[in-house]
Image (tube, rainbow, N blue to C red; front, side, top):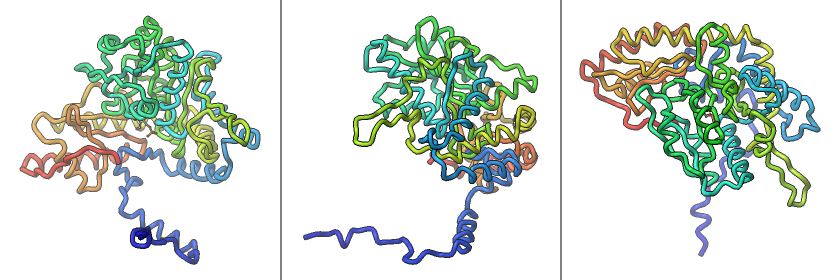
Length: 419
Ligand SMILES: Cc1ncc(COP(=O)(O)O)c(C=O)c1O
């Protein structure tokens, strides 16, 4: 006897289409319970560089929304924009002549493709499988996702007391099957730039592929440096760096669905490209994980970069670092301890006597949706230019939340999770 009728999912699509005016109203009202990011109430997920940039993102996205980056012969416009975005990125990251790159859908895509390239390169060199990746404990889980897709082992090595990659300890776990060393610029949990020069020296000495995850810092750190901050080397200026991921949809302020992955030379990049013809519809050559690639994301990345230019980015990134410095000072006055010495847009801060997870819960009551670190327990902010205008509000709410916890508020976050 069939049980299909009892268990089938009921048809929920409207029989007749609805008016778009009504649908628009519903879309608006559905967003009302979301975090009030336009008021700066989140310091994760959204990068708000101001209404003018949002306009440029939206309008340029719409102009190429139907076009498809899968077909460069059909859309030479997109191919040209991608190539120009890549050139702008490479030039910001001190890439040597001959370096190449592509636009991907995001940081996870960029990292996955770099890992694939490193794996296939290792195979071409006859390295012995099963392979492993060696990275600091602070590296992003995108590497674990890539590793799980490709059945690679991940070796996470504890960071030092300074929260930075411990290069000697990383080298210690390298073996003949290590295909990649990873450093972050900066790491998401601490916002600190790993010692990329030392990792680069180790990579060269051991003939290893070094990937720098600059998903957060790739389009931020170059401008912070232009603004006069002395940053350690973190990009292709370190000879051992073979690939870099840098997200356009984070501090590049481009529409979501856009990142870049760069390679020191085409000979490394060529291992990223998937080229398949054994099926009944011809040869399909795709550089990134996606097949169809949204033209809107490519066009909008190009348009935002043209709109802001170097001066625009410098001004936006100045606001980010000013907000970070003001918050670091404010939280220190409130008795918190900033982890390490952040120089970019992320900062994390712990408290010697108060439960920061309970403080987070109180802040949430005032509409703040930010992040937390687990090791050590700390509040975490990834700041946008807009946050410069809400520093005082945040510090006032933080002082209140800390006071509530000092006076006995115990309701606390029980699990830190992004999902
Ligand atoms: C350092 C770092 N790398 C990689 C990623 C992954 O990027 P995406 O969420 O665009 O896939 C993130 C996301 O926050 C990140 O902070």
